[in-house]
Image (tube, rainbow, N blue to C red):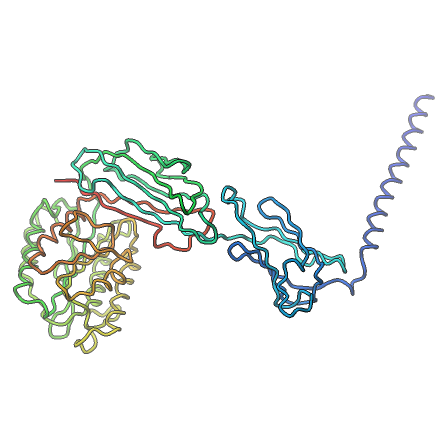
Length: 504
């Protein structure tokens, strides 16, 4: 019992000591709080906005009281802490030795490319010594900008079936805020007709999985592009998905009757030739003519029809004996009509491949409005509104048909010297801006969205056969940018495509 009482006494003493310690700590906190509180009337009220511009941290005084030059600015960047006085960073525009309305603090930081992923945000805090109060605290996002571009090439675009070819993908950082791009990833999904054999990437530029199509590159410096080489075996194109093709033909009076006859007969023979145009039910063909006299309207010459063994001859004959419109050139109206006709087809599905192929010998001389398939205006010259509405019609087709850059196209066959090739490439073909395909010397275009220019209608049949072979028998190969830890400001070079056309 004596031992028990002794333990109880000790416990009571310890309890009293602990209570005393707790009370002392609480009083200390209150005491420090009271001493540090100089009164509500002395608190500093100020609005400060922080943001990052490139590799500059900028803090702007947006109202409230002025801050002295000895006010402390603390921030954490890429895991490292920094502390400066206002006077070390201030652009004191009015030379009053204070940070006041509209004035900025600017801190330039250098980025270590090996740690680029750490430059996500800056944690900031500013403390006013006079009032002992925090006037700025919080994270500021870092959004570094650096352009990434794709390109693709192949050592043989016209290989023999079952031969091996090598595809080369090059990913380049063109720079921006920093001399490189961080954590870059691209997608390159091999089509079924190309069988993966092997691949290797340039030193230090990640790994490629042909199963997923993902190439996780990592960081790319501006002077060191990443390169991936993929060896594949070429298979014959045997199974095709249904494709919608619209031929939009210029029937204006500037085309002689002889040239018109050459064009329709050449197109007819191409449709009849199974080596050129499939008869297996995998192509839906629409033919539209624009420029019909007297009111410059447009005509659906072949409504959306799936071409097969039972109907290809009648389709070809209908094309061969088409009457020429012999009017003006309401190009926009023809594009509107072709687009609406394709969309209203029972077979239309945005997941299918859609291709619009314009054939013209000149520039538009009439303008047209959406839903109106006639030419408006005087028709004597090409006016700006004629060009603008044709561009609008192209954009209408892209949006209404839900065209996608990985499979769909809007191309042009320009005949003679009348067409404006630069305008067609820059404003009409899609994906754009387009490229010029030298159809006489190369088997495949450099990518989707192209203009092929031939000297005269005498070359039409040769050109149309070559175009159809590319549409129906080529293997499109595409690489696309997925993302990086830097912001890519230019989406025009985020996707690259090339076509491989196996020999017959």
